[in-house]
Image (cartoon, rainbow, N blue to C red):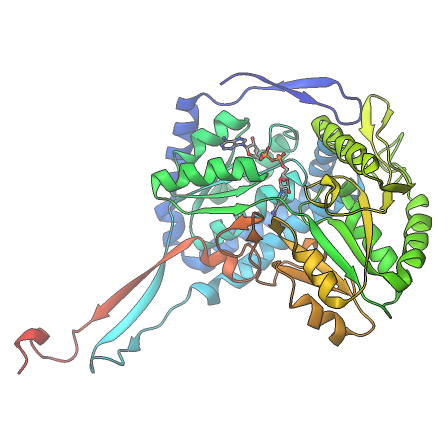
Amino acid sequence: MNDIGVHDPRTGRIERRLTPPSRDELARIAADARAAQPAWEARGPRGRATALRALADALDKHADTLLDALVRDTGRAYESRMEAGQVAAMARRWADAAEPLLTTAPRPSSVLPGITLETAPRAYPLVGVITPWNFPLLLGLIDAIPALAAGCAVVVKPSEVTPRFIAPLRRVIAEVPDIAKVLAVVEGGAPTGAALVGLVDLVCFTGSVPTGRIVGAAAQRRFIPAFLELGGKDPAIVLPGADLDRAGSALLWGACANAGQSCLSIERIYVHASVHDELVGLLTAKAEQVNLAYPEPSDGAIGPLIDPDQAAVIAAQLADARAKGAVVATGGRIERHGGGHWIRPTVLTAVDHTMTVMREETFGPLMPVMPFGTEDEAVALANDSDYGLSGAVFGPDPAAARAVARRLDVGAVSINDAALTALVHEGEKHSFRYSGLGGSRMGDASLRRFVRSQTLIDNSTTGRDPWWNTP
Ligand code: NAD
């Protein structure tokens, strides 16, 4: 497959090229992983846990090298440290969690006396994982690790936009020979991803809605499960009586971490009209204290736009909003520094749902704020979306916030905080609407996505003939 140029997000220059594997090479990588899978599954959860703990140790040992590559991939430092720290913890968590989830015991039938049933998990042999560029390492492993814990072999195809972390990750994997047999990471773009879907027994896709549709349809044609984790337009609701200072800080983090390049970014803020101006004032003041991570990646909190194409999307949404009457309280323009594209935390007011900034995924640090009158109105506005990934509610007390949260058509809601699903992975959640399809990536259910249930129905002990001969 064709060479692909890789941009440096801080300079805008193509600073290396990646060469995807040929179709034959990819098929060989998939076949090798598939061939090693039965022995991996036969080790059982305890044996696999030992290997996963060794992988966690290797990730820790090489955290600095991984971090360095992630900073070059994404141009930002703070979130890269978060990613590098989270993956080893994730491997240890699944090493501990898998055994009880996969252990089974026989049970008597309640229908036919004397018959026992035993349901056991059988792993999907080969899982394909296709991921985006916004959290390259974390999203590369967030499905791969529970799939390994479940007994699958895995081939990961990260985004072609951020491939620098792949070489150090491969070195980490090579240090754990048991894992190296069943976990491969391949470089490449859309053609490699599409080819991978044709080689695996189950696909986990994280990315945009349009690509998700293509991957979902390809998986459907092959009769294999596809777990789709797609875009978002997460709403936040601020009820009267909420702690506005706290809400302002949480919203700034929730909307602007990773420069807003996160599926679960807060992208719409609905605030009770009585506190609208105060919240806008606080948000604006807080936003203006946040600096760009420039000239050095550790100089500030807001990194560059990782994919330069995203700058045009954000600029178009801002132009559309302005043309329809939105007011920029702070930020509001794409800046060029050192060849990269940057945008400061941006607060917009006088917005409404005719504007693309309130309807389409932005993937930038924009905080459009809209007032509401009643709780019903706030819920209706929050639910007026094609997406349903997650959201946030701030209230005068937890009960009031939780009551509103339960009415939102999204998979997880942070209460008196924002974007907690980025940090807390143990809560089961589904994606609503176009935000995705399939079982929960979070919580224990994540691992269950990777096994099929097989039941043995045992009539050995009753001593009777097959039942149709029984009087
Ligand atoms: P994208 O859809 O352009 O690409 C994602 C991946 O799919 C890449 O690896 C790409 O090479 C591959 N790909 C492209 N075409 C393909 C095809 N035809 N067949 C198979 N694979 C193909 O997404 P992106 O721009 O890299 O990422 C941004 C998007 O990801 C945003 O919409 C964001 O919301 C979403 N995202 C979702 C989550 C989540 O958990 N829901 C998390 C992070 C990002």
